[in-house]
Image (cartoon, rainbow, N blue to C red; front, side):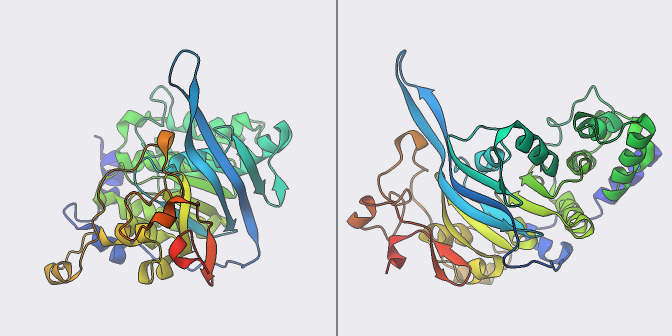
Length: 358
């Protein structure tokens, strides 16, 4: 590792590598967003994504990865999306971006339905993605300059090579990388630096909306706060809107304005970030929050964890009625009869649970 690379690497890991995740509370900056209640950049209506799975030579059954999901995202906000592995978080995000063709449903961006080739092309220019793994999502045969400038060439944003190189230098500076590194290959960079390259690529086409697919889960804890702060700074600088997918509930709490909780292809609760943590309503949300590690031993002993039994049912054979009923400690026979709707229980807090039916 040369001197310049080492300096950037040291900058990425200026936090204690042995720190607890709870220290994110102190390391991640708080950014106030100017968000208008009625200014929605993205609206998802009854979105479904079914994958046909062959059960025999002549028969297939649908795997319901995303099943009738609806929500809205306001311009300039960060909507966190959490849930266990296999619940459909990443599939939902990729279906919104049309990386998967939806089985049914509607996606409305800036007030216009995303339908047809022309609308889809413009949508993909304004809605991009930061992938989970900074190692596999970057082509090792391409230089950093080529990786970042690829969207510029695809969307024909700049006509000359000099204009593209200038834009690449601006983007590298924006994400905290030196422009002198543009001619290097990705193998020369640390995990945190690679994720910064991925972020710069996502910013290349001047998007308004970015889907962040667990962008810090593959990174050391010591680097996570640095990348989260980068996301916060870029959001403020460019007026970005995020759909932030993550497993780590602490990470989502720090960066999100609102949080949606997903289970087996359905959104079961949606609320403001602080409200969700202070007053969770759905039994699944309560169990997720109780699983957050508590660094204080006294508080950990005082807090009674709600441990779920069993595994998530297969989307191929989802339970009838409420999808969570087979693991829910408050389930009744009535829960098997009907799928609960996502309803507004209090201001900005939505829950899909029979316990809150009128």
